[in-house]
Length: 124
Image (tube, rainbow, N blue to C red; front, side):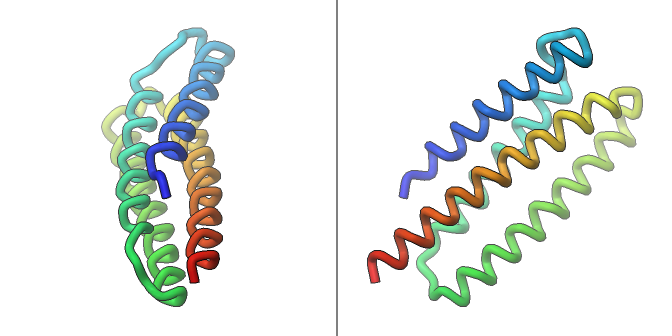
């Protein structure tokens, strides 16, 4: 299962949506918040993808998925609150880009997990 395709596609879609948000709401093509959220979620997606590729039993795989999902949400929450406390004047832009990246990467992660599950069930 190729890990690069869903992460690259998530990055491209999140970037295009973030550029659109910047252009229409903040009147600029790029922002520091956009770059920080994209880098953060790309790193999380790579780490999650590497953990998902472990050969495990189905029950263990479900446990790994649950822990990764909870861990990603906690890390994202901590990063969001740390960023807003350090740079409180950019809150609206950060919320828009952070939530966009979170949902786009989560959507494509679910798509990737469905492919892994169907691949694992077809090899048995």
